[in-house]
Image (cartoon, rainbow, N blue to C red; front, side, top):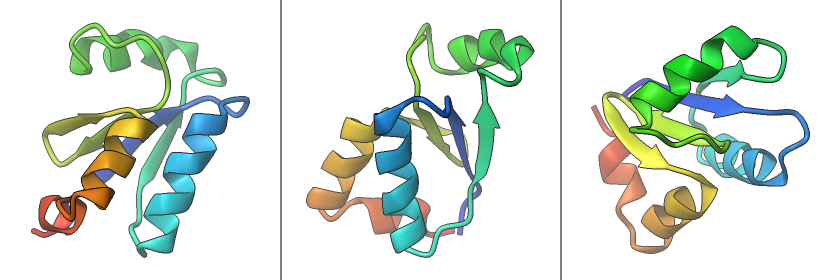
Length: 85
């Protein structure tokens, strides 16, 4: 399985939604809390091509986007293929 990174904030409902989906699928992920680690936010913005909102989700080197994008991949049946190594 490809590594998954998710930039989050503890106050973000969409972040919790994305983490619930990944957890339900048995996906291990690295969470980067940009509220607790504000020095990581510029890194997130650069990796996300200017995306400033959380969550920002990465599967391997692929920028998925936010929670809505993650859920859209799941509904389309494409998330499992993206996660596969």
